[in-house]
Image (cartoon, rainbow, N blue to C red; front, side, top):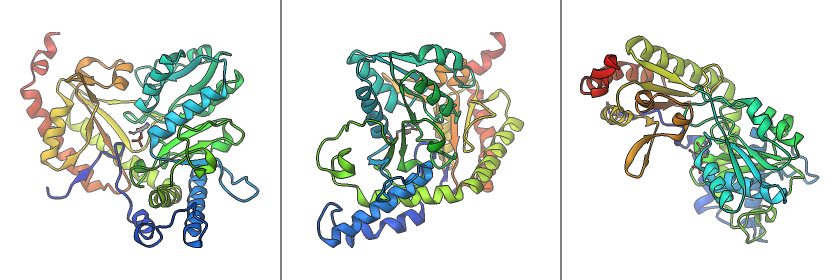
Length: 397
Ligand code: PLP
């Protein structure tokens, strides 16, 4: 197969042709610095404000400034920066409180910042998930207390697509005087987000997950929420993030937000159809296979599939021969492949966790591509099981 079949869209997406077009003038023609006094730069600042409103619309955030600026949106460099900045600002906004509540299945952008908070003396509570990746809300209610500075729960999980009840969790946090952050990196562009209908204080997204380029993101900070920057410098972003703006990418993110919003309803139907076709096709042809996550409540584009008794990495290598890209549910820790923290938190049996492959789709995938994967995978799995000691021994256990 010559053409690449790309099923790794939760890792990163293609920049859409429309986004690319929108960005082009901002490299060699309109390259002025938005902070400049001259019109050449100043006109670029106006384009950034347009992009800000486009992103605010994706979040359902109103334009409430007297001057019409969507001031609740801060442009960042990536999802990780948004996560770090939000948590940093949140703990600073709640001095005297020493507890942070999050989950076991967050992205390292949250989890590793929480490690840093532990070093600074905070107590970090990681809420567990069940076998489908869902939270125990009663336990969450018990853990969120008057000493909690911030609760951080992702909108949707990057590995399984499981969606979390963030609106309810934000209410629970506010009831105890805590702030609420959500990492919406995987939700943005795939699920309707209406921050104004929730009590969410901080929400972070990343451009490269929704057909904008890498190296740009956005952080929503609810109006009235105290915000201390992580990057101190110039007065960009209303002094909330110093540094000359990544203009072309910000313009790209704005256009991508607009495109995602207008196409979301149709895309959801298409992605759900493709994902279900893939899962059904595989379930019909391959035994000892399980679909992970909250089947009734997950992202339309994500299929986390465990092919039991074999290694996910071997599957990926054989898929690569057919130019099919996906990713495994493993992470390389100290030289050996371990199932990811998400699969471990869900308590997947060892033999299933190791054989997990994530197929994450986008608007650019087709039925033909799905059918190609359904056609080649049974042979790949049979071949690998044929040489797997775990497969031979499975009935003797
Ligand atoms: N949060 C989630 C849920 C993600 O999936 C990712 C990227 O995979 C990130 C945060 C980090 O985003 P970025 O790569 O833009 O830093």
